[in-house]
Length: 442
Image (cartoon, rainbow, N blue to C red):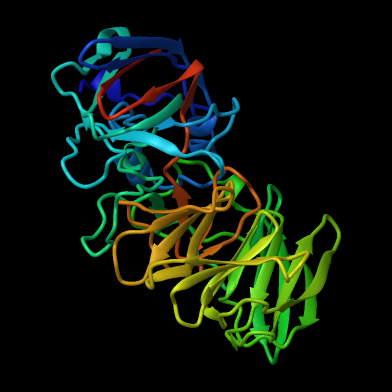
């Protein structure tokens, strides 16, 4: 990798992300036949948004360490999906499965059957012409299924970041982290629960009353290279407005955000036919709307909110008391309840809701899992998904979260940097190998 290839252009305190032209060639090779499909890509706004000047990347060291060299990290993973993906999507949507994946400079030899291997001999960087050629291979038993789209992603997401049905155990630990972490970003006196482009909202619980404060969202006023590594950036948290709501909660740590609303629940053990009270807060430009949702337990299991709650696609997700089931409750019709068998170590307080895919952390074990709220499938991933994080944003694409009580920001790294939809889906079967050559050029 040359110095030229590592260069990041900085213009007016923002990072200039070039629009890269990409071309993919997919080859399916059997004993008697060979199928070759080629197609150009569209580049999404993911990298441009990741490198914007809204204070998310306020630490130069972390930015360079996690995202460059660009061809190795920011664009170093590939995802092959079983359905075409709408242009502009920044994540794989729920209902779409990742058929195959691979990561830069990684040869896969374990149980993960979606993951292929990086071809070091045929891959090449032509820095002088701003051109990178990635070549990935899948054996006959890897990456089988329908391929309708190919997307470049972060190298970490190439490690089966969206899960693999063949992984049967999470005891062996994880490989890379699916979250970018900037622990030197902010320090807040209270816990943020939600933010939009203009304001940040914080909450504090005292005497069974929750006080919510509206503050200026300082993040967007911070330049991406203005913070020295190892220091903490203190901002002016001037309160604009305050609301107080009687709620009867015993904690505000059991919470979630579905992108538009924030939900709080007490730590309780609710038996069948019992009632779980969920406090819902909706944020408008001038007021906060507070509603109490009385969720009747119509399942055969106890609700156990100590492990956290998640709201996605109009459903509440909560774990059973036995720690063996993920319970899905329709918020509009509580009698519409489903039970899904899960591994006992899942931890919903560390769950990310990404376009209807729930990325669940594990307690004390370095592998997570992905539950698709459309297909109702759950797959373990090789990637680490840290537990105990609090969602605080309504933005759909980047899922900003706070670590603990304001010690840092997190961002998912399984974004789609490019989308390459095939004109017609192809199917890889166990009698064929697969090779994908993906070339990008600035």
